[in-house]
Length: 194
Image (cartoon, rainbow, N blue to C red; front, side):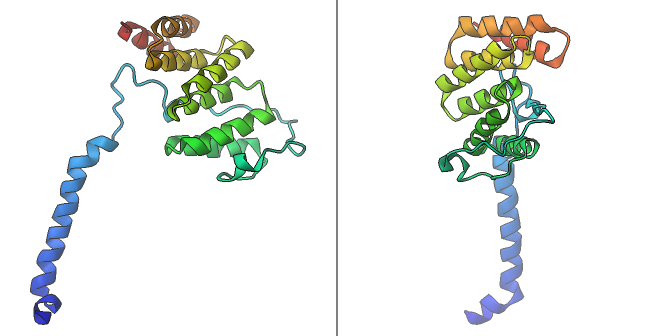
């Protein structure tokens, strides 16, 4: 038996089997990991997150957060770096960390509608949709001309079965500009509503 384990007659077929097995598993599971971009109700994703603009004179040296909010994320005080990290966490579906960083970003600029949008979507993906709706509505109250946050509000409401609220939000998104990607997404989502 030891001659068989040490021989190439054993290891070559074993290596071939392992490669074939790995390729079979990959072929069977790859669809699970591919994102279906053709769905009309796919909603906002990491690819359409916007990086918030930060005022040059903003300083966070006097701001602090409870330790519970910074335990699993960077402690940098640079809002541009925090925004980059938050978007990376979101892209990697690490929504808890992304939400912590988006919440931190609001301490730098509590009027940044893009951050409200990103935080709202992240909270929704965490299953905290009631909080998501609050954040999205807070962002809209700051600037109701931001098309993306209307799209996200419509998407979240649609996911929750709030069809009339989704219709209103998506209608507002489409009305702001029907010719850009956001307006076209809103129009497609509107058409797919019951």
